[in-house]
Image (cartoon, rainbow, N blue to C red):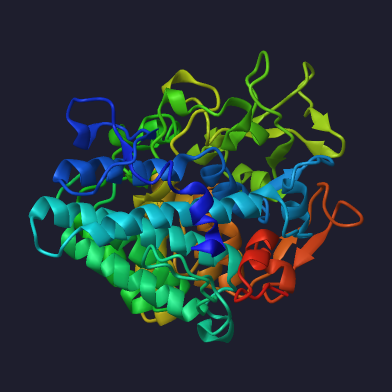
Length: 485
């Protein structure tokens, strides 16, 4: 597929094998390259490990999260930078920067990898092969979902008829045009339903599973405003009882344990110490070690986020923000911006910038169900119960919990749920999509290197700049691709 530069990149990396020999189903995946024929179960299992490894290239997870985080009101950039995060943060998108070019390239390389495996497996040949096909269908669907979120407009705008991205379901070398957002969502849903029907093995959160497919279906249905199905699939995950919310005290260190040891994580991109990106890791802009240097730490928690969390000092989610203070107790500053480090991508395996970024976790299922119920109506107490469950886990109680008669200044239940999602998932890549798909603006009423006055910045959900530009290289290679305005 010339559109995604497959011929240049794929030969050396498509079929990847694992060098460790013990209990491979439970071992973290690696990215040793070895072109092999997809003939035996062992071949296909090894290639599937490689498909997972495609998710942890140097750029894919970095751009996946940064491109979402830097468009949100979770963060305050404290000064100018030559990194393209400057453009993302300020919505001055370019079609030539690494954070769009490499993200697109690596995403479609991962899709090609899964497609090659899917094509090699005959339906119903064995439960083991069905499992592997299901895992690759999940990976293909998830990767397309991340692409269409970034380059396509929110589904509710024009009922999904806006241009999305090409949905690649084969390894043909072609020049496809962009499918509509609606078509892409339809393909994603079909892939996830098929994946769930094929997967029967309860693998760890480092791998796809039936419940991971259900969890992603819940999110996809929520994004397309199919609220009944969003609730249906969120309930399937909750009712599976495979996952439990972490207790309050261990939750304060949620992101440090490896995914296999976290009872709440449904799916994460597993990183091992050899995957440590150091200064190029996701967390390098949000955190630095107390003594020495582990990252640039030039982007901090926004003041509005800090103030929301600060309403309840006992809230366990305050643990994910580390204020940097002078000896006299005053806040350290970088320019006009107070330095609030965020540590959600740090300290796995005792390594400052190592993490296995979380894609799906149980808390989201409760808040998906809550949001969907606000839109269906008639089940307000269930909304309150789901939100309070998450707040209680965070250590809140008594007057800090909501009641139907006390929404604590919110005009409606949707506002309650979206604020709770912000508190629960800040810098996990949800916030900007929660705003724009609900037709809400992104507002920065706090100091940061944004806008002409550095104090106020606003982007409407319908603005052209609310989505990224397609990579210029792909537009040149494929004349059938039409650029975003």
